[in-house]
Length: 47
Image 1 (cartoon, one colour):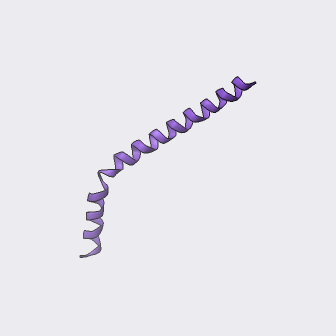
Image 2 (cartoon, helix red, strand yellow):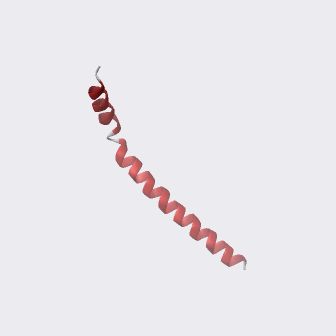
Image 3 (cartoon, rainbow, N blue to C red):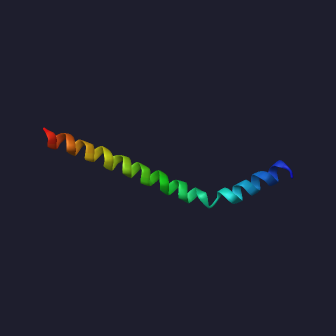
């Protein structure tokens, strides 16, 4: 197998994972923001 064929096969196999990774990034970012907000709330509530 030549390198271009290998790259093509790899791209074909990885293509379905692209939207999944994108979604994971979005979810992770929103989760991080929510966690930061909840931490702020707890610190404000303890005051």
